[in-house]
Length: 296
Image (cartoon, rainbow, N blue to C red; front, side, top):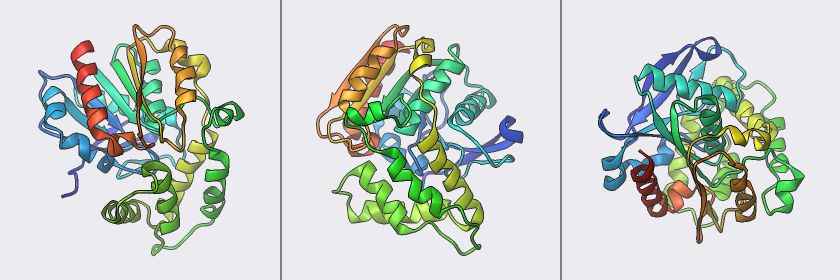
């Protein structure tokens, strides 16, 4: 069954409708863990977390879809990762949640860091997964990270021309994302699921435009190195050894930049792929429960 989304109105970007989902009914007696999805995915990325009894017993799981993703829409047509961080914080405020932890996969990791910088009184801790705090730099490529410019630019160019209502995202685009995220061993069922989910989310000219801006954001985002000393909360970064996008070597350098965090630690997951929350959910879920128990 698909995850049941809800929406809430927030004022950012001229007024936005932000899609979100709780794993269970909200319990004010539990800490809240916000889940931020990876590039071109949706709240469905966190099905393994929503199904984990230990994790849902330890926290309210709140998945929020970023600008350009899922069912989230804005009045204004341009957006950045900073905008998504602001909107996520406005969602928490609208839901009456005054303090939360944030877990983010890939792009979700740097949105989590942005949320922590913008609202240190709200964000109690962050769990970045399979991510980087840099821009798409030569430095990161020397450390074994992908070439995000080469990956994104053809899609950005291909998505530049307006399309008709019958357009859906090409399967080749989805397969490239799945290959980078899940690795070569993506099951047929998982591949079929994400083909359908992408084609539901990205159709018609509005879908084309949202996907293009999301791709531009991925390629052209600003790096966070000089800002990471403004993260004042605990950090637990999980990085897989089989991640084709961002490397363990990069994570080992960048975890040291959280100089004002009360504790910043890196957990290396053997065999972990880029979309770590899906491919190695047991490791991610157990680490999340332990992090929450320690810092909530």
